[in-house]
Amino acid sequence: MAKWMFGLVACWVAFGPASVLAAKFTVVEFNTWGVPLAVKDTYRYAFAMERLEGLDPDFIVLSEVFTARGKRAFHSAKYPYWVDGPKAFPKLVSSGLRILSKHPVLRASKIEFCKCKGDDCLSRKGAVLALIRMPDGTKLNLLGTHLNARGGDPVRVDQLEQIRDLIRREADPEAPLILAGDLNFTPDSEPYLWLRRELSLEDTWLQTHPASEPGYTYDAFENAYARDYAIRTNFPLTRERIDYILYKDGKSAKVSPESSRLIFNERPWYSDHYGLSTTFNTL
Image (cartoon, rainbow, N blue to C red; front, side, top):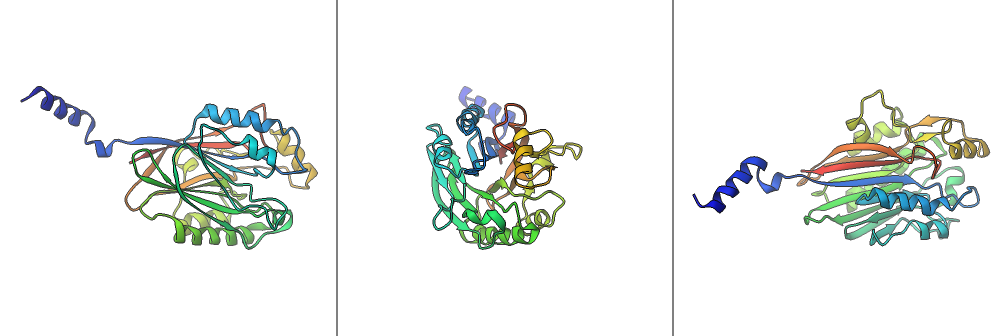
């Protein structure tokens, strides 16, 4: 047997065919706490973006990027492809959504939620869905959203129904789907059960952590920003997991979470929320 052929066979035996070798990518979700006129220490935006660049994920899904200062800060040459959610007009502020990507965005679709409650109605909250071309030529559906904080579960379920319709219309069914964002509900709530049931989405935190690790992304007892803001806005002091990275496989491509971890969950605080980072294997 020729030496080159022997080497090829040995490589195949050791590693298997190239088509089953998994490639990895990382998604970060982060609520920047960029609410205009209600937050302080806006210099933290630049520091947060610097930290995000240091983490070096493939994709960053941001929410509450409401202000001009925030939009300037949460931008980077390291992420040449980006797309925002619905713009402000005719509301006071935009959706605050931004997706940053290392890889080309082939197309993007946006929706504004029809229902809202309280001061959430001042912004054009909604969702943005980006179809992304990965380095190996495959595609990925990446959806960022930020659901209502006020109004209770009925409002959030209505918003999820609009997201379901957006996915059915615009997502590439052959490609995996990842949904990331501040969903403002806990894992024991009706909207969470609806999301898992109706969209068949898997929760990356649950798949990579035991039940004894709650993964709180909002903690008004430990995080000074969360505590102070809750007091000023008459929100209860709580400790909850309300930010998520969820996923499901496409018809012709699959992904699997390898690890998921909290970020920015220690001093110095960058937001009233902690961020979430999940690394996926593509299969």
